[in-house]
Length: 134
Image (cartoon, rainbow, N blue to C red; front, side, top):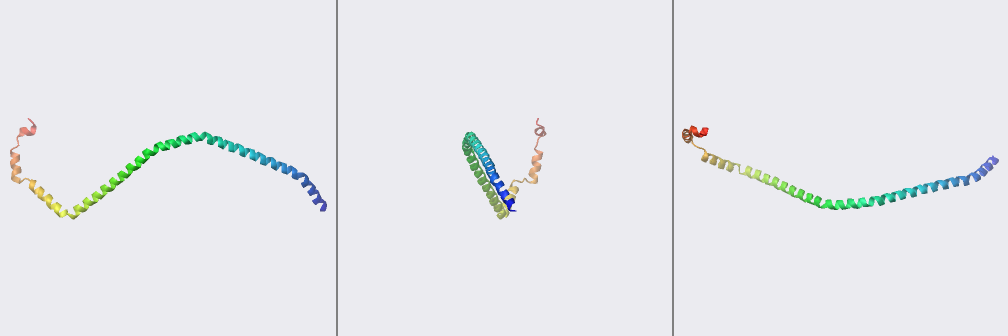
């Protein structure tokens, strides 16, 4: 058993430097690929910087019309609220004064309503030529 442990120790002494070198090569390859990716990201950011500036300028140009749209929307909301309030007040006024309104309308209708005799007289006075248009 002791000879097996000694043989294993000798094998590990020979394999460890080789494994260390392989791990070192893997780490170097990983670092190189990471550096290439970082350079690619940097180049991409440099290329997109003018596009981002152009987009920022476009957003600044759009801000004024958007502000105007918000103001118009506020005015429309206020007008709608005022119209709803006016309709409610008109309804309440009509409900409160329904009897007075009915009396006023009835008196107006009775004042302009022609009597039966006046209607018959007006029918007799119509000339057929006036109806035909001749």
